[in-house]
Amino acid sequence: MSGPRLVGVLGGMGPAATVDFYGKLVEETAAACDQAHVPVVIWGDPRVPDRSQSLLGDGEDPTPYLRRGIEGLRRAGCEVLAVPCNTAHAFVPRLADEAGLELVSIIEVTADALAADGVRGVGVLATSGTLRAGLYADALRHRGVAVIEPDEPGQRQVMAAIGAVKSGGAGPAHRRALAEVCRSLTDRGAERIVTACTELVLALDGTGVPVPVVDPARLLARRVADLALSRETRSPHVSNDARYRVYSSRSPSSSECGSP
Image 1 (cartoon, rainbow, N blue to C red):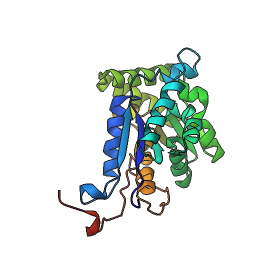
Image 2 (spheres, helix red, strand yellow):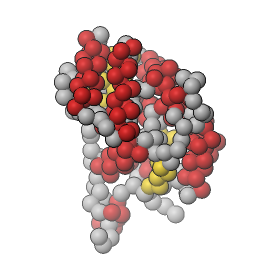
Image 3 (cartoon, one colour):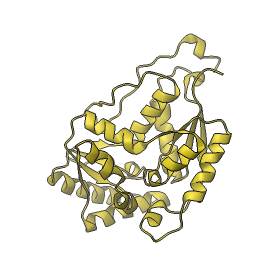
Image 4 (cartoon, rainbow, N blue to C red):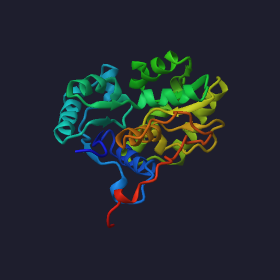
């Protein structure tokens, strides 16, 4: 059957980030009706063990849970895989290959956009596990982009904000603390701040940050929409908007839309 490719979203890590990603996928699809949107199956399993703790050697291996979710999406007929959890990308590429799904990597999509924009230095806010695994460091340095990470006190503030979002308790104090960490990264040469944990964009609105804040979840949504709807992939260059929020120029034909 021709038409849009079915997208599998491996979510639940955490639930709020999964909801946020799906909303962005809807926003990044220029559709005039239901039928023109991306078809999606969401696997939202919050029981997946903490990915960061596992990478730090202090937690259960999440691989069996991730494999179960990916296999479930494959059985549902999904062809494209999106994972709105940065830290999980230390585990999912191999599992996606095993299942025969095309993974759209949130890491690679973000690195592509930053390199295309000519950025030379990036401040990365992420879980300690993501930093330890070098997920963004490897991808960005390969593209000639320097990576600047928080110092130890700053990283504690980042992890506190992530935990607050997961528990539903993120507030102004967390936003102020994150903005302070961002300013310190900017002082050290960061031209952009990457919210390299999908919870962080829910706690940091860019207020008080002197450089644009990059939202990998939105970049992932944009790339997934392009791929699923078989559009020609556009240049990853983005505008100077603080969220790198760029909408598709695609307009659905009347044949794609039925009754509401």
